[in-house]
Image: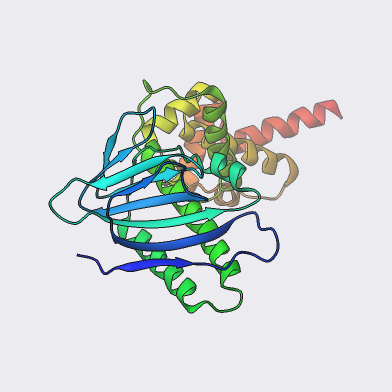
Length: 290
């Protein structure tokens, strides 16, 4: 069972702030009814036990461990524990001059239980904010605003990765979103073509499986990610051969991030010539034009 950290209030900002923390705390939640809603936005985090949440005009739902939810300012609501064990709930309330576009950016949907993938990380932030509010030192509200923004960013990141991980093609994925993800991958491949690239790591860093991102890539460019990288490398290699007359095949292979023999085989497969043959043909063609 967790300790109780009763509500702590941050001093209101002396100047308008785009985002600021209002209150923070956690406790064993008792029944609560707010027919006129709360004065600021709230994030609630359940750690143990279960509660029932009621929103006028919506079906009631249970809210329990490894879940969190967002309740907008002014929205009437009530909730109460329904489990035998104590219902342990943490909370952060916040507001600000730019809070509405931030909420839209972070994709926080009202009154919908969301999966909490790292509860301990959340409680660590609640502890830090509570200590900050409890100390009530000058500038605490500014520090809390920075912590809150980072916290919302991390929540958004965790949800995005979890939602996208392992997606399959039959799940609807908008054309614009697909283009954005594929463009990120393509930019990375263009910037790191001469390195030892792990395509699986590229996909994982974007929150998708290698297989699924590869299908998105093929749909956009007509080739797989590996074929795309090889095409970049060959184009760069041809550029080196056309501009650096004394460069060796071994040096070219090194510049484009390939082992020499593999580079020669790949080049011949793509052009029908070895690098040396291509260079001689290109030189002869230039001589004829001269």
